[in-house]
Length: 208
Ligand SMILES: *[C@@H]1O[C@H](CO)[C@@H](O)[C@H](O)[C@H]1NC(C)=O
Ligand SMILES: *[C@@H]1O[C@H](CO)[C@@H](O)[C@H](O)[C@H]1NC(C)=O
Image (cartoon, rainbow, N blue to C red; front, side, top):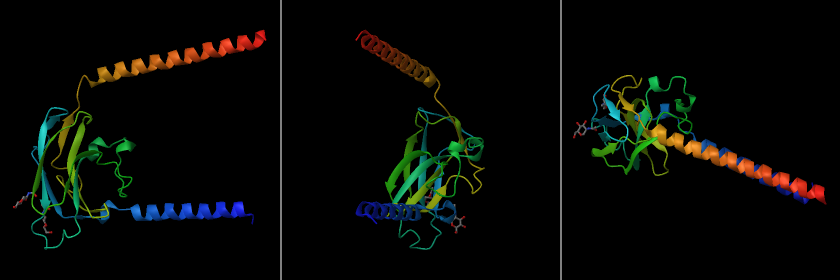
C-alpha cells in the first residue's frame, strides 16, 4: 500500500473507533433508570398557566423510604418541563424515545442544581417560549460522568394523571411576523442586487 493510502486507512479506523466508543458510552435508556426521586409542584390537576406570567414552585428530593446509600452516585439534578402524551400526538419532534440522547419529551430546562439529599425547591416562571400544551415535570439525577442514573416526576408512569396546561403568549406572533417580513424583504433585495450586478457584468463583457 502507498504510504498516503495507508495513512488514510488508519485515520478512518481511528475515526470509526471513536464514533463507536462515543455512541456506546452515550446510550442511556430511560427504562433502565429507577424512580427514586419524589417531585411535586404547586399546580392543581388541569390548571392552566400563562407562559411568561405564571410561576410554579417545584420541590424535589430523595424518596425517604429508600435504603441509605441509594443516592451515593448522584451529583447533579436537572429539572425539566416535559410534554404529556396528548401534546405529542402527530408531532415527531416531541416524540418519546427510550434512548435518552434521542428523547424529545423534556425539552425545557427548569433548573440544574448540585444534588442534595434533602428536599430542594425552586420557583420557576413559565418561560415565554413554552408553546401551548399539556405538561408534567421530571427531574433527572446525574452521576459524576454527567450520565442519567435516576429520575422522578410529578405524574404517574403512564403520564396521564396530575398534568397541567400552559397557554402560550399571545402577541408573540405579531413580532415574529414582522421579523419574517423584514427578513424576506432583505432576501428579495439581495437577490435583486445580485441580478443587477450579474447583468452589468454580462453587458461589460459583451462590450469588450
Ligand atoms: C419533602 O420531605 C418530606 C419529609 O421531610 C417528604 O414527606 C416529602 O414527600 C418531600 N417532598 C418531596 C417533593 O420530595
Ligand atoms: C417511595 O418508595 C417506596 C418504596 O420503594 C414506594 O413504595 C413509594 O411508592 C415511593 N413513593 C413515591 C412517592 O414514589
